Length: 312
Ligand code: ASP
Figure (tube, rainbow, N blue to C red):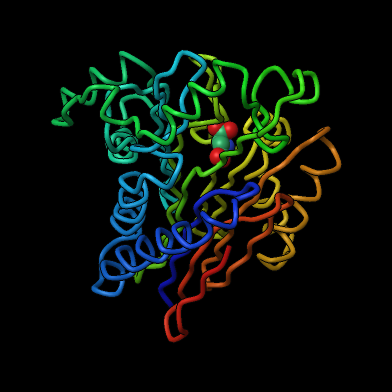
C-alpha cells in the first residue's frame, strides 16, 4: 500500500506576486506531513501537521493571516474526517483559536461532531487548547485591506463572492480576492484516508457566516474504501451541490480520481450561477486528482516512490 499526501492552499485568482509564497507554503506543509507519514505516522497526524503549518503561515486564509469579516475580526472554521471510521469533527465560527484543525481533531471522538462559537471554544479550553486574542490572528495585510474596503476604495473580486455580489457593488479602482483556505488528504501505511481543511472564510463575510469548509459532504469527505475529497472556493456555491460528495459518488461509480475531480467542478460551474472553486482527490491506491475553475489553485502532493509535485 503506497503512502500519499496532497495539500492545497486555495483556489482563486492568486496574484502573480503571491504565487511563490503560496507554492512555498504548500511545499512546506507537504514536507511536514510527509516526514510523519514516511515514518509510519497515521494519516490523522500527517493531515493535522500539514494543516497546522498552513494555519500558521500568514500567506493563507486559515488561522493567522485569515481574511477579516465585515466587522474587522477573524472567524475560523475547520474540519477533519477519518475515512475508516467515518468519524468527522468540525469547529466553526472560532475567534480565539490559533489552530482550529487541532480542535476539529479533538471532536473526532465526540460527543458532538460539530461545535461553533463560544461552545466550541469552551470545549477547546476543557481539552487543553488555550484561547488567544482575536487580534493575534490578524495580520497587517488583511487589516489594511479591510480598511480600504470599509472606505469603499476596494471591492471583493468576482472570485471572492462575498455579499453583496461584486456586480451590484459600485465601481471601484481595485479589487481584492482571497480563497486561500487550506486542505490536506493523507493515505497512511495502514490504508486509512483522512481529509482535513481549515479556513478564515471569504473576505468581509458577515459575522457568523459559515461556508462549506466545516460541512461534511460539502467541503470534505473521506471513505477509506473509495477515496477522499477536499474542496475550496466560494462556499455558498460549494454547499449547494455538496461538492465533496459529488466527487466521491463519481469514485463509487468507478471514475478515476482525475475524472471525478473534473466532473465535480463541472457540476459546480454548470449548476450554480458563478459557482467557483477547486478540489483535490486521493484514492486508497494512492492516485491523485485535482481540478479547479478559478484562475489558479495552489497545491503540492507526493506519492511513495515518486518525486513530489507542486504547482499553482
Ligand atoms: N470555501 C471557503 C469558504 O467559503 C473559502 C475558501 O475556500 O477559500 O469559507
